[in-house]
Structure formats: structure tokens, C-alpha cells
Image (cartoon, rainbow, N blue to C red; front, top):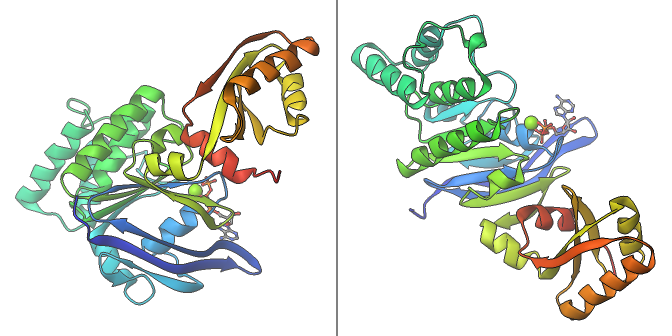
Length: 314
Ligand SMILES: Nc1ncnc2c1ncn2[C@@H]1O[C@H](COP(=O)(O)OP(=O)(O)OP(=O)(O)O)[C@@H](O)[C@H]1O
Ligand SMILES: [Mg+2]
């Protein structure tokens, strides 16, 4: 991977009246990398992406995208990027072919180049034989792949994908990510927003945004080691609600949260893990809660995120 920056964001801010949607954020995206922009609903992901695509003017700060300023040269940016928006990506009442013709035409493709790129989109989206199907009749997974194909039909340097896998089943999501990796292998910079933490694991680097502010950044591995210098215990027990209340009252558990049907409890790495597991078994048993197992586990990005959002002073 090259070390040139494709995107440089400097104090980028968007305010709506008194409300600050994106609050002076700073980061860089390297050429050819898959960059994940991670945050909960309302965190500021779409607002940031729209500013980087040159379709929403920042209140202050600036960003350089492919060498152009979003403030001064938004029209130049539009020529070198692809954008798949969160809400709209395809015309439902047009067929697969018509959608591809529309987007190709919009990006200025003609004649043999158009034919060649159309074949490519059909191929990567697995839509051979479905060229005349209406977009609205395609299943979610096909739609997302077609939308991605249309967003990169003109082979842009940088592509912005705003929650591209929302509402799509896990297998289709996996296929979609294979496609994202293919693009990155060819040198395209991929900026993708998600609130699926498992997807963030596939990114080269991630920034986490919360309430308009960057709260952490790095590779998935760096995030897990730098931001979570703690021990995570996974607890499988009955009466999970009651168990969490008991864990919260110990004084030595920094954080406890639901993880599917289990609990993840975070303790300081200074604690003796073996002793603490015994303490927990005893404590929960005393309160009549049957514990099936307590294991020390590797932190996931979700653990990092939960702990960053709910820090507890001890
Ligand atoms: N046009 C607008 N006017 C006022 N507030 C807005 C506007 N657009 C966005 N916001 C607010 O800015 C905040 C960030 O919105 P944004 O859409 O960027 O979040 P997001 O991270 O994309 O969320 P989601 O995961 O739900 O798509 C939200 O609180 C939202 O209500
Ligand atoms: Mg959004």
C-alpha cells in the first residue's frame, strides 16, 4: 500500500443553527486503503461523507480529497469520486441495464468504454441474465452490488459508500465486502461508513465518531491493543439483567454490557484474572444466579467501542 494521502481532513465542522453535527474532526485516508468510518445513528457519518463529496458546504475547516479542497473546488472533487448514498442509490423503476446506462451516461462514458464497463458491472454484481429486470425486483444483496457497480462505473480514484450494507443479509454483506476488497486491490481508495462492528474488522484503518467527535482511530489491531489495555471476561449465566446489576455494584468491574446472550465484563489488567473469575463465580452463586462459564476473551472492536462510550471513573 502506498503512503500518499488520498484524503486529508482538517478541523472539518458542520453546524445546523446552534447544533454541531460534525465537530472539528481531523484524520487522513491513505491511497488505496479501505477506510472505515464507524459510529452509531446520528453520530455524523453521512454529514461528513457529504462534505467530503463536495455536496454539503462545511461551516468551518476544510478537507482535501484527491488534492482538491472541498471548500474551494467541490466541482473538481465530483469528477474524481464515486458516491453511493445511504438513502438513494438506484432508480427502482428502471431496469438493471437502464440504471447502468443512466449512471454511465452521467459520468460521461460512451460507446465502447460504456459497453466494456457495463459488462463489468453486470459481472461483479452477478446479474448476467437479469439485465432487463426492474431494480425494485432485485433482492437486497443484488441491489447493493449493482449500486456499487454504478457508483464506480467510471473507475473513480476514490469511492464513498454510506452504509452500503444496511438491511442486507450476512452472506450478501460478506460478498459485498469481497467486492470492496477487490476495488482496493486495484488501487481505489474506499471510504465506507458502517455501524456494524464486525465489518469494521475488514477495514485497513478505522475512525470512530461519536456525537460529531472522533473518539478513536487506527487499525483494528491497534484499536484493540491501544484503547483497551484491559481484560475482558465473557460470562454465560442465567438472569442476565440481575447479574449485570450485581456486577455493576462490585467496585472493581469497569464496565459490564450485554453481548448477545452473554455478558462482557471489563476489568483492569492489573487485577489477577484467575482470582477475579473465582470472585465472580462466588458472588453470582451467592445471589442465586447459576453461572455456566466465565472465560477471558480477546477484545472485539465492539468491546473497544462500548468501553470508549461508557468510561467509568474508578
Ligand atoms: N439538515 C439537517 N438539519 C439539522 N440537523 C441535521 C441535518 N442533517 C443532519 N442533522 C443532524 O446531525 C446529526 C448527524 O447526522 P448524520 O446523518 O450525519 O448521522 P449518521 O451518523 O449518518 O447517522 P445514521 O447512522 O442514522 O445514518 C444528527 O443528530 C442529525 O439529526
Ligand atoms: Mg447516515
